[in-house]
Image (cartoon, rainbow, N blue to C red; front, side, top):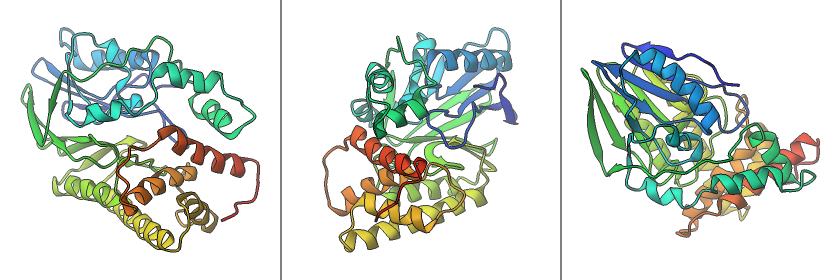
Length: 323
């Protein structure tokens, strides 16, 4: 399932891309190496995937270079649950990222959702379809060791690295990693390439603002949390998508339609052709609706997944998409 190699995109900067396209959980990771030092950016979903990534990272870093620092772009499990494979590492994250760790199902709960739910119902079917490939047994969720607000700068040998807090956006605690001399930004899940995003915190205007901050950094390459590398022009198109989606949410919310109804309408219209996982619109629109309703309660992530699963179930069964 995972590639065994890292791709070098700038001097001392590598990207690990385990795959993409209409699925969940295959997150991109990064490695920065210079002067006998290294910085890992995010870890994969499971110990097995993380071991594959770390094998490639140690080969790229060279002998004797410790992988003892990790920058976590946000607290979703597909970017952090491999941390236990780097015992003793210093883990950098925003202070707000700690709050999201409390919202997401634990590995044992996710394992149960895959194996103990009814595969003849939308949610059980969906979890098997998209998460059944992963083994979450024995994962210990580790918190970051160093948190910050605003900005935190690091040196990786001769390479300066800037950690910029940009959340709440995708989650409450997002950061991006800017490598100014290499003109590379690791965007985490602020940015999805090829598929619809699933934004949990929002509102969409904050996700757009985070993207514009990335553009202001003048990168040559942007590494999304999922999918292929992106150029600034690609990021501008993504911002236009986010802004249009926010406009559609505002209109349909004003019409009294639910977020799920709005998602089904946009899918039926094929308003955003070429993007995979359109059922995720139900998640992101539900997030936007919470802000339009001025609802400050924490989202129920499992309920949002159920909304998405039911849309995907209907589409897979060629059922009617009733607004």
